Length: 265
Image 1 (tube, rainbow, N blue to C red):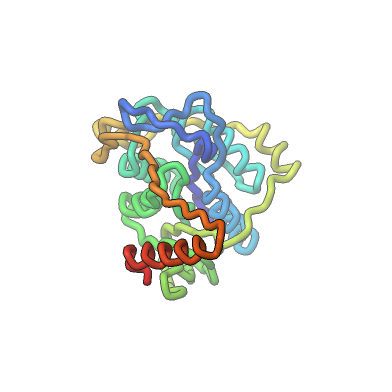
Image 2 (cartoon, rainbow, N blue to C red):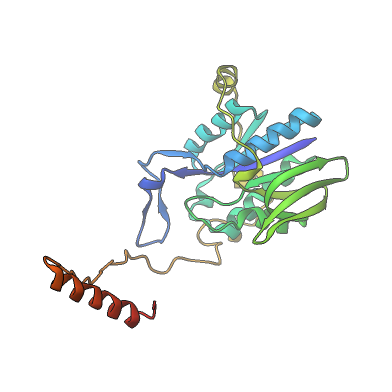
């Protein structure tokens, strides 16, 4: 079994900054980590490999420093990694990102499952996993909280919905997007770190993939951020000070009146 896990390197949550001119994220000079929700995809992929054998290929599209995230994934237990990096990919929205990642998956080939995190913490759209499935014409099951069984033709999964879970049998190859309930991520091991440090991670550019130049990066993105602003939070409050019994009664009456004005009572 070959499992491909697309991951993303994201800024630390408290370090996110946006370029107001282009509407894209500023990544230079910002500490970056593996997207936390991708760790669950890595973990369930490792567990499936431990049960069924095979290999895990982790892939990421990003700047050269995204290789750090790939090495961490290898240290956790993935077998190999590929970095997709080219200035032509800069500013890509979820559609253009899915397009490039799907092209990379085609080049890797021979896969049974593509497992993605539910969403990335910087964009928070949850669109890339289903987008990859769309470009590859594969079945997709999203919000997977449990993988029951995998055989040569199908996998049985539990899909998280508002009322509980749906149990689905999905034909392989397929794309899964997983939620936190699917597994608890393990920590990198010393042996894994040694392997990751020595590993030669290939870098594929647009010239290595079967992609159309006009579908790449910011220019190939059909969605744009047209305006960025920081909302102003302003609250008007009414302070009631009750220093004696009479003031307490008046304060309670005012609170009741206020709640009725807000249609709470």
